[in-house]
Image (cartoon, rainbow over all chains, first blue to last red; front, top):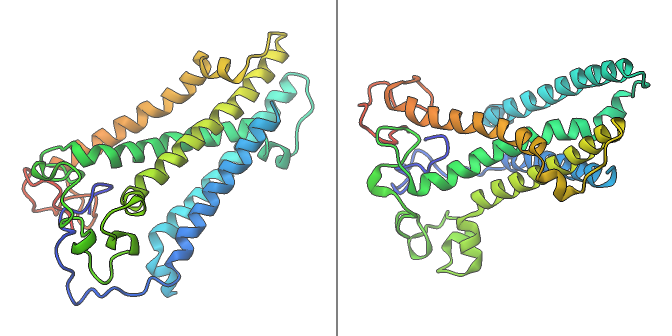
Length: 52
Length: 224
């Protein structure tokens, strides 16, 4: 799969050997990245606005 | 162990990010205090530096350009193509593609995300563009963060030199802000363009960022 462009073969049916395994704790990674980004933005936007 | 194996890519980059940001803060703190001493001012603690506009500005100025790069690339690759590049769709697929190809509404399957199964509506539209919307939002917030922390820094410098301070709008119209912004943008655009062009002729065995080693140069977007 290319860096960002959509997978050109994404419309093909998935092979039975690649089942839709439950993502489970993968969502923890998704949440962790969002939390770190939101924290960074929140902290430094606030600092920039307060300390002017 | 299974969690680490299944998330190794995001874990690796998460750890690299934290290590690099920590390194930046330690080096930045040392440089800041050296400057303070040179100007006859008292040094600041590490924690004070961590919550300073100077560190925030240095951090967010790089964040905004990275998220702009990805947001722009996500949007541009919907319509723009590069024949032979692994980062591009084949030219005949340029555009937003059919509902069938995008597995929307009646073409969705039992495992499709809930909003993709809708036959239209705002929620489906938002979900259909959610990746771009989130990247764009992070870009805009980082850029705004860069502007307000940079503004604080700029006015601090002005005060030290007995110069008049400026408003936020004055700062975003100032060459200082645009120099800080564009020096980051130029490198991102060059890197993205290079990747798009280099993947036509160059290969990395095993990487999804590359076409298979034996793929023809004129194959477009053929990695799997």
